[in-house]
Length: 113
Figure (spheres, rainbow, N blue to C red):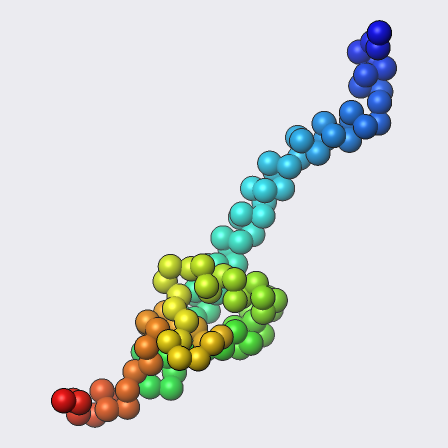
């Protein structure tokens, strides 16, 4: 029979126990990191886009360079965020004003019938 001293002296038991203890902290830290990046991306889009023709959308590359976040991470954040929309016809363009681009005619008060 193995005693308590020998049981906790086993390297494998210590390694597995440590990983089980640290895993929740890692998961919580990762969630905080993702949440902060979501807020950064949304704030950046809010500051760098306008609800006017030609200024409504920003590309994944622009956002990535502006925030120094990996493009895949930006794409993942934008596609999952409830208030960030992808362009309805083009990929990798993002906006906080909706998925359809504004028409030039809306600015001139010309209505299409």
